[in-house]
Each structure stands twice: as C-alpha cells, then as structure tokens.
Length: 442
Image (cartoon, rainbow, N blue to C red; front, side, top):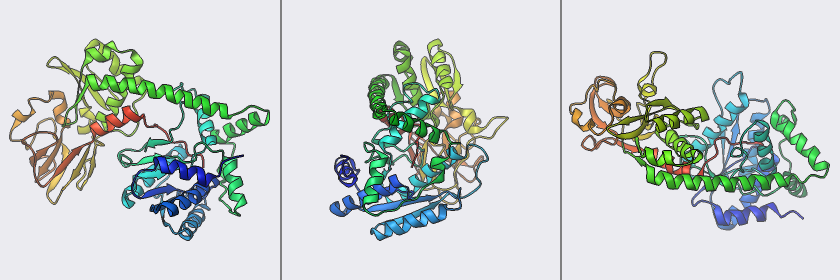
C-alpha cells in the first residue's frame, strides 16, 4: 500500500527543509497540487511560512485560468500566492526549452523577492524514471543518466545562486498522488501537452507504461539512476579533493592552476575540475561543452594557450592561469562585449555590485587602462587578463576615472561594494554537482 503523501512529504521536510520561508512551485497539475496540499499540512503543523508560486507562460489560452485556479486554491489554504508571468516574445523554435528556462528564472527571482531559500518542486519517481530514459534515448552518457537529487542547486545563474531545489515527493509514484487527490475529492489541471505524442517526453512515458503493463518493474530504472548518482558523487568528491590542491581563486576573478597536479590526474577527474573552473571563471549560466573542456585540457598538457568555454587558459611567469576570455568581455570585431549594469546587479555573472549611484558606471577596464592612474597595481595580474577586469568609473564608462577595481587592494571606494562569485560557483559545482537541466514533467 502506498504511503500517504502528506506523511511522506512531512517526514522529508522535517529532515531536509532549509530554514526560513519556503516557496513551492505549483502548476495546478496533479503532482504539484498534491505537493501543495501535503506541504500545507506540514506548514500548519510547524508554523512555517509558505509562498505559492505559479507561472503563467502564456503558451496556451488556458494558462491564465490555470494560474488563477492555483491562486485561489493557495489562498483558500491560507498561503500567499504569486502569479509569475512570462512576458515578451517567444521563440519560433526550441519553445519548450525556452519556457523551461524562463520558468527557472521567474521562480528564482520570486524566491529572492519573498526571502525563500528553499523552492519545493513536485518531481516524482515517475519523473526520475522518465528523465533517465529520455537522457539515454538522446545518446547521453552515464553521468547524464544519474538521478535527480532530492536536494540540489537551482540550475539558473546568477538568479538562482542562493536557491535550493527540494523534491519531497521524489520517492512516490504519480498514480499514488492522483489516487490520494481523488480520495479527497480534489480536481487538478490536465495539461494537454502531457498526452501529445509530438513531444519526446510523452512518447517515452507511453513506452514506459507499455513496459510496466507487460510486467517489467520500471522502478528498477530509478534504482539504476540512484546507483549512477552515487558513482557521480564519488567522482565529484575526488575532483573536489584535487581542486583543493591544484586551484587557487584570485579575488579579481582569475584562477591559478597547478598544471602538474591536474595533468597527473586521470582525464575524467581533470576534466571535472576544468569544467567547474571554466563555469566559475566565465560567469556563464550553462556548462562548457565537452569539446571546450578537451581543448582546455589539451592546452594544459602542452603548456600552451587556449580559449574555449568563455575562458582563456595560458601560461604566464612560470604558472598556468585560467581567466575570463577578455574578448568576450571587451568585444571582438564580429560581436560586442558583455553588457555592464548602470545600477546595482550582477556583472558578467561574476561579481555582485552594490552602491552604483549617479555618475558611477561599471565595465571592463579595457585594453588601454583608461582612467587608471596607477598601473603598477596590475603587476600581479597576467597581461592578457587585465582588459577584462571589472572597473567602476566616475565620470564616464570609457573615459571616466577608475575609482574601484574588483579584487585590487588599494583600489576600493567606500561608495561601492563588489562581491566576487567565482569561489561560490566553483565550490558548489564541485561539492554538489548541480544538474545542468531541470526536467519539469508536471
């Protein structure tokens, strides 16, 4: 007999829920409605504040009504509800992925607005099984087939940098949730796309249903995903130990690397460290591809320079350095560089800037160091990294006086605070191996 979802979710949250207010993503579908009802009971018992987030993506005529349904249900339960709307133009191709990414960002920003570090998601054991099958069908390797974690980092950056994804129902079957809802007289939203065979996810689900009908225990696939997850975690722990010995993150955003230590490691561990390093130093949201990592590791072994994945790896003064690709920041002939905020915010995915008032602008130092009165403070920074350093100027973005340089002692200004994000990103990637993709199947 299946366990009561409210009891299962409550026990899980007692052990794993982050402190403070919590947010829950609810579409009105059976999985997320079951999670909402289960968590609501737990919140009532524990006195925890719960914010209900629903996304109106505007992709179907019914989406506004479905969001309104969630809002009414949440408010009837006594929780504050928030409708997040995906505005702007929608892409002609890759719509599902774009919608998923937009949803990530909307939810992460809402979590920040309400002060919630934990975001509860309604993924089930069925989602775990379907994700494994989808990734294998797409030709992914064993790492891609590893299980979703019950607790993981948000996959969006920088919006989700302090958001933890929590999946209290990951061990439960979808049908058990539906039976529970039906027994309570509850109705839920049926998204027609969940039965539309044009989508790979739906076809995979239909094949799995046929397998289960024939007598195959599809839960074995979830067990396989769990075994692969344990193997992935062991690999990540080994990479983290190597990184602690071989990588030094500098406050200005670069990284000094012990090339001998990385080259002596087995390739898969070396690649894992380089992947995390490139992700942190580049400030990009998505992981560098395999081709980029192979290019960087080949250059590392040969002691040569290479640019890939938004970073540059190069020798300088007898050491090996990994820095932000300066061309990506300052611009190249064929495309402009990274945009700069004129107000507080995250610059290039690498630094949080606060205190940007009138007359102050943030941007790259540039190739000619305009506005910098003391160039000797750059002596410890490789020449190829200097144009991409974050500079705050007064009196103009390009020709104003440099009043602050990120990570440069002697170049601070009390009006502006600059917080580097590289160490946070590097460590959390290696220690938790946050998923690159969130498969939302509710």
